[in-house]
Image 1 (cartoon, rainbow, N blue to C red):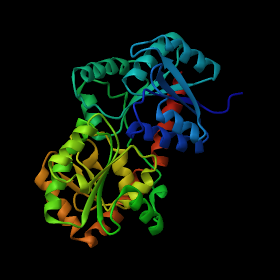
Image 2: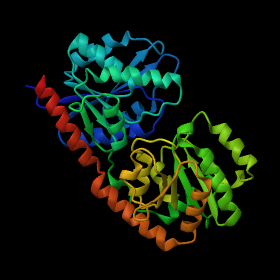
Image 3: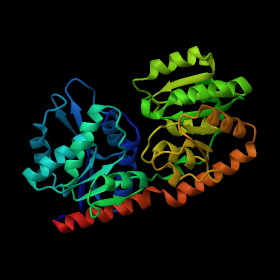
Length: 378
């Protein structure tokens, strides 16, 4: 007799970012609760295996790569359906518009229930607008639609998604993983990255895309560096705008004070270097990188967008700024650079907030309640 509900987390991934980290955190937490969890990654013939799949394998999760010959190849539906039947998958958890469309087809052809988590609805161009319309159709047939922030919840409510389907579940992490530091390791890492041993580090983690607005971050960095010689800046992450941002740093005359680290698989070590964390995004769901920085006890300077104001209380556990406001960002950074006591207070409160309100255990409990409900309904 089957003893546990088995869930397939399905994603079409372009890197190891917020949604991917949510999947790893959620999978780890529900495994500890006795749920059987597998991870399915859409792959393409001309591309390497996605990093989320490789990371999932390293964590010991059952991981399967479903190959697509091209972007709109839906012949993989049979392969996924056969896999679900063979492995007794009870429910599919979709992360992204393409997995959601596949889930709709799988429900029609194989009767497998599914739920959708909406991590972000940033409409960057016409294609993104089409994708959100496709996913909205899929939501009509899903068992539940999970939003990671109040802002996303309201957005989907206004878009006409039935209230009985909508659920709010904040992203969560294991805050205990982000505490502690080794001065010796920090010095070695500073040397490796070409950072001075005594500088204060202002940093950010994320994709180098328009949504993250690193232009504002760099322009504010230039204003800070005009006032203080004790600071260096780091940006960990990669994306299509990397060369543009490097060129901007050169034109601002700050290239020697800004390190573009590219993608790093040791983000906990990078966070341990950072004294002030910045997120200058123009849109967000509930950013994992911010939660990780807060869990690390780092004071955060973040924009008032998406679900961020529901986590950060200005002046208590972080500092809120308006998006695109270069002067406000630079002045806030200079305030914290000059006040180590304020940095320590904000960082301590930030850690407490994440540990108490945004834990992976709390997130997992809410998701498993939905899994139980949907499987029982079937």
